[in-house]
Each structure stands twice: as structure tokens, then as C-alpha cells.
Length: 334
Ligand code: ATP
Ligand code: LTN
Image (tube, rainbow, N blue to C red; front, side):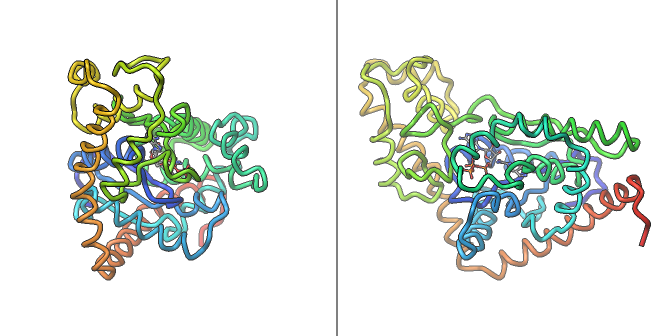
């Protein structure tokens, strides 16, 4: 990444908390790929965030590498974008500490993700889960990111990152860039196939709820066939038809057709035909991604080189911001 060009900066991340899903792809990854020519981009596997939920260490290690491989398989080019693991750049955790001293308990307790995850993991409501958005703010602010491409569920975290940045700038003088969210209309809120009231999530214990980017074609078709819909038979977008509306959203995001065009295409068809068509469209979109992913699996040295170089580049950038912050808050220079 040539930072001397006057391009704006993008930072985004994904937790290696499972196999990335169709929701992660349509809501985030697809936009990362589209934006990488016009921005200086940094993308990381947010492994520090992932341990807010209990993980098997061996599995976390594998998933962290796999997420980076998927970034590349969907089309993130390491020649254009910086790819790294969050834990390899120690400045994230350090800035997070300073920012946590500039964040109020009250604002953190309003976060819906904290409320959701506390309910899901009632036996482990740890402090990291609570301060999760502060670490996310550190990820973004370290690189002075202008834009953060994410799915709709992350909007609240982006708002708090802006609030934290604004407050720090107010007390200590201009330090951070206020980041803007980048959320596409189409695909930014893909819902679970088994409970369409909830968002599709890679850590869902029910695998029928999500399509993994690595699911084989027959599994994809089977999962779409089983997708929960209503007792009606009309392929129509409507708030009282969350299952069918979600499938229409997916079909539209994958094919580029509008919802109205899709409704017209399937008028007079039953749900079975529609579900099959959605499944086939998704499977054929994922096929080349899976092939590229398998090829990368044969070349672990190359993958390691990418994330090692990525971390050293990111660390140099991050250090500039962290040094400035340490100076501003009154720490003695080394
Ligand atoms: P977890 O299940 O561990 O909470 P997740 O599947 O929700 O994980 P994240 O790693 O938290 O995924 O999110 C990575 C990116 O994917 C974020 O930008 C997020 O907004 C986006 N994203 C996640 N789920 C969806 C979804 N269902 N629809 C659209 N975008 C999504
Ligand atoms: N919290 C995000 C993942 C994430 C992120 C970030 C996204 C961690 N750090 C920085 C954008 C920018 C999520 O999707 N759950």
C-alpha cells in the first residue's frame, strides 16, 4: 500500500469466530473488494475481539489463518491492501487502554451487541465483552480511517467510535479522524435461514441458519430448501414474510437484480422453485471463491508472508498514532 498517494483510508475487520458466512460476504467482504482500488485499505482478522467469547485455542489459531485466506479468496489483493492479524500489532491493545479511560460505562452499557452476547453467553459476561467497542474504536482510530465498510449490525459501534474520537480530540487537541460507516443498502442485513428474525451469524450453533462460504453446493441447496418461510406461496417482499424477504434480499444482492425484478421473475412460481434458484445462484457465486481458497491452502508459506508483511506495515502506521496519543495524555517519552 502506497500511503503517499492522497487516497482516503479504509479499515475493517472480521472475527475469526467461525467460518465466514454469506452474511459476512454480502454485508462486508464484497464491499472491501470493491473499494480496494480507490482507497488505501487495511483489513484484519480480529482475534483479540474473538476471545470475548470462550474459544478453543487450537481452533482459534486455525480460524485466524483461514479468515485471512478467505479475504484473499474473495478477491482482496495483498498487493493493494494490507492484511494482518490484530494480535500481531500490539498497538491495538495499547490504544484500547487509553481509549477505555475516555469512555463512559453508561455509553458502553447501551450497546445492543453487548446485551445480545451477554444473553447468549450468560456464563461468561466478561469485562472484554463490555469494552469490545473500545478495542474496535482503537482498530479504526489507529490508522486514521476515513471509512469503515461493515454490515448494518455494526452501526452502533461505529457511532461510539466517533464519539470516543471526538471526545479525545476535544480534551487533547486534534488527534483522530472521525470515521464514517460505509453500509450498502443491498446485503447489509442478511438474516438467519432458520430464524429469519435474527441476523445470520457465523457462531450460530445451528448450521442450518447460515451458509458458510465454504459449504459445498449440495449443502447450500439443502439449506436453502429447508429455509424457514411462511404458509403462503407468493414470492413477495413484505414485513410479514421475513423468510421470503430475506431470500429475496439474498437473491437480489447475489444477482444484482432489484427486488421488484426478482418478484416479477418468480411470480406464479412456488417457494420450492424460488428456493432452488436462490441456492443455485449462491452456490455458483461461491464456487470460484472456494477454488481459490483451496489453492491458498496449498501455499501456507505465501499466506504467512502476507500476514507477516501486513503486520509490520500496519505496526509502523499504528505506532505514529500511538506515540502521538501517549505524548498528548502526558506519558514521558522513552
Ligand atoms: P459472530 O457470530 O462471532 O458474532 P458475525 O458472523 O456476526 O460473528 P463479525 O465477525 O462480527 O460476524 O462481522 C464481520 C462483518 O460482517 C461485520 O462488518 C458485520 O457487520 C458483517 N456481518 C455480520 N453478519 C452479517 C449479516 N448477517 N448480514 C450482513 N453483514 C453481516
Ligand atoms: N466488531 C466487528 C469486527 C471488528 C471491526 C473492527 C469492524 C473488529 N474491529 C474494526 C470494523 C472495524 C464485528 O463485525 N463484530
